[in-house]
Image 1 (tube, rainbow, N blue to C red):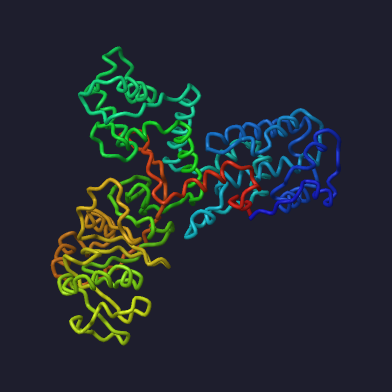
Image 2 (image 1 turned 120 degrees about the vertical axis):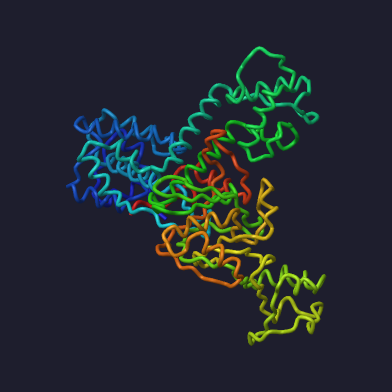
Length: 522
């Protein structure tokens, strides 16, 4: 974490005290004392922000601080009032130190995020882009592009830019009074007539989902039902045009709630490196979706099933190295004890039906008919369980391997009916993917010796086969609760693991007042 000391401590570095502004900021906090001291030692303790000759630099910094609101940050956290007071004042080296610290702090937050991701996502292993703050600031000052240099640090991904537009949109709606709430009552169906339908109509008109026209406002018309369906798609509900309890709860979420979701998602994007890979995969846990990206374009989208709330899919990045067709499943010890042992106790017949093989501690096969499963200890489980390739195999017909400490991978599933559910947190942590062979074709695009026909023949053989990739494919397992969508503008997703609140709390306090603050820019 960045060092944090009182600004008065900088006096030990022979920063001269002045009157007025200096006296007011002496009790404030500086977050990058070593970087600031090194910067001024290198420039001979010359002021770069205060005094008439530096007015343009300070003007640009003030503008950049104000514009940080577009990124979901809080301008007041960057001592905007102090910058305003310093503008037009005399040269003041003590204040200059402080203002340089404001630049370095904002630069670090735009480049890497305000919140340390490791305080929220304990499995986080993404490497941030390098940024040496003092050198970057010196170049910006020399080139007269202070504001532009800070703007350049926020993510350039198109998704990030669209989320910023969404934040501006919902802030505009909030500033105009938001939208009306809908009272409690019976479920509303297409074709119904009721006073609450007028409230529903006004709610959807406020967000532009429904044109404002002089109609029978208490009638749930086909046009209004279509607007309800669009809204339901936006919030991940079954799009049936029926306003039941879940839809009503989402309709009554405030604009401020959506603003908070957007701010948190923007922050999560800032945690990522700029370069995710020319060809890469993104899995959004909260969105139950996998995307294949190539040359800056999304080329495939697949539904996914992710970990249950008590067996959460971790957030991390790793490189895909190979595929396995017709995989054996090595049942993890935790699943063997928690899931398979109770199952075998209830019905030992599933062992043969589903192709399980039981091994002892010497890796010798054991006839399951000789085992009294009710007498097997869960705390000292003596067996290893494997499942043969085949239609019942838990991994399906193919798995995509990107070795990682979590032993998490992407795989097919025999339970394809689960993809029909809207909220798909059913797995034990791994990622089950729909249409796995379409994904395999994309992954194997560089292997001319593995055309679709050969892949299909290998599947039919039933033999476990490993296929190494010609080049690594980065796989990024992410957690975003808002995504841009061509159909409905933005999709606001359920925070299935309850992680957004901690990010929001850390965003809402000034730097240095939370253990979630990101490190400095070294």
